[in-house]
Image: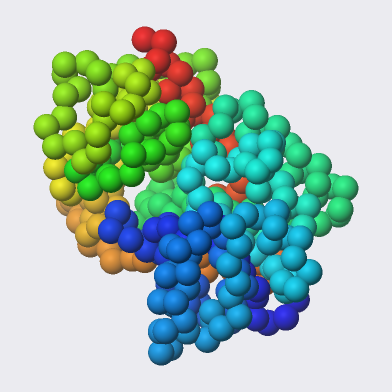
Length: 377
């Protein structure tokens, strides 16, 4: 492998190239990492892809990364093009209803695996049914066994890379604390979510699968895997009077009532380690998001406040006064750097990938269990 990695992006949208809805922008992080050439961008919207590429090429410092970038409408055409250099890795930032399936063209993970391409896959890993995504996971494992390749498959659970989360892990380890209870609260600023697809659970998977998945994943990261038979959940449905929203940014009347996102969800489950986890998710805020993640145990409480913005970590320890740590961080850079390092060195260091595809599938299973429990309640 040459020192300069050849990388492709699937989707020219906000996840890969930035936009008004969030701070993701994987391309900007790769530009800072360096040693990378962007070989291709795949997007059915050729105009958008062209505009994104022109803007990046014009950058005085990073434009050279895009000097030979080519545009394609689909993954299959790109991989079949013998003029394209061999790809080292791909960043998949397509909507969740466009990938994770066994069926073409929604099976891009399989197409890349067969081509021996390392993959960074934005969360959630799909919005297709759990069994179908599980079959995809198994097929990727089969491909690696048959071809004797070790693919690096990283999923975009960036909170695992947050400095505050690392500090929480350190405190728990160094003090030998046992986690008894996890309380995750996430209330999104719905007025800034302008994508019609997000409001349609048939396309996005719903806010637990698509959004609260980050906090469900954090609960697993700290407290361990769920005992699936203990998962319980209830929600305020989108068509319920208590779910009426006054500042809808989309025309929800175009979405069937049964497919409108729930306005509030409460879920709980027990982990294999014996802890209890509770998730509260809301689609209720005007403007800013509100998010907190707490861990309780014998003699301590850790509370991560606003991990997406001005993060604070409150540490309550019975033996010491309360501490409030203010933490500035670019977890998106750390996440991207971990993946690139794993591609370059084989992923054999603790600082490399924190969320593998196999592990992310477990989070996917749990978010679907919560959604199913809500729909049956």
